[in-house]
Image (cartoon, rainbow, N blue to C red):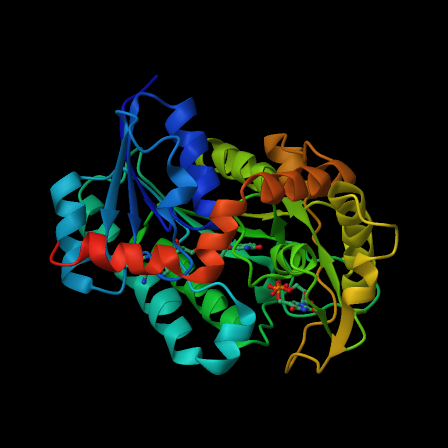
Length: 352
Ligand code: NAD
Ligand code: TYD
């Protein structure tokens, strides 16, 4: 197998850690650099099992730092980039939109510029893969699916920042011939998901018998995909997609929030040995999210038809595996909810 030097951004986050693990284990000939700023969402505990592998390297750094990023590309001569670093939580984007513009738009533009500068004389075999979200397409009614042709219509500061970053990626392709690929994926779930997002937040709250906040009437619909299946799709797209192409990734697995949470409550009752119906009593309806998108649903047929990817896991099995992971990794959950790991990083990386 060909040797390659690949930059993964945001590899200490939820999806990034699964992608990094897959690449480190599957491609021993690749030298992988995980660049992550270790924000509240980045956690090196997600990667302890691969931290000492010879083809894995961690670099703490910020994608918004232009000079640092230019120097990094020159120093390591990356020939591939998997760009996952982002601010990723819609609720946080509502309270602090500028942080999202900075990391998601400016950070992406910095990486694109550094790749362009490094590869300008020879684009052969190079690849800049931008990992994005289905939220750029806006909100669906009861019918229809997002395809790769659906016009962009972002409605939250998060999705607007991701849409903008997608536009910059395409602009660098058309203007400079940068070899780019984009994918837009639906909601992920699985191990290592930060407990501010719906599923891990509900698992954590049920465990501690705390209220489960459901926004509005709980009727909003999301299309859930197991994170390991997203990582598999990213592997296939990175290696086989045609330059300039976009692929939608999704699980054909739509759930209203309330039905999903009821299902999760049943699983948790069984796993925790609590009488049926105990966890569901924690469901608490709270004020709706501002501008709350009604429904996301992905048509992933292009990815299936052209590159042969399909999800490997049914939702029942995936959700149960996810609950098992959280219950078996209490320390991880306690650390991220207590903020212990943040103070550890502050000490560990001061003066570096
Ligand atoms: P996450 O919030 O769990 O992780 C983001 C990572 O990026 C963290 O490790 C964080 O430390 C790092 N980061 C943030 N700002 C940075 C900066 N300025 N410089 C360097 N590193 C920085 O996010 P996630 O859920 O794993 O999402 C990863 C990517 O996938 C994002 O681009 C997101 O838009 C996209 N995506 C996510 C989902 C989902 O359901 N979570 C679905 C589709 C697409
Ligand atoms: P989230 O996990 O934040 O993902 P996204 O907003 O990117 O889809 O939220 C998933 C759905 O769950 C969304 O419709 C908002 C809703 N939600 C709640 O009802 N309660 C919560 O506490 C959270 C975090 C989300």
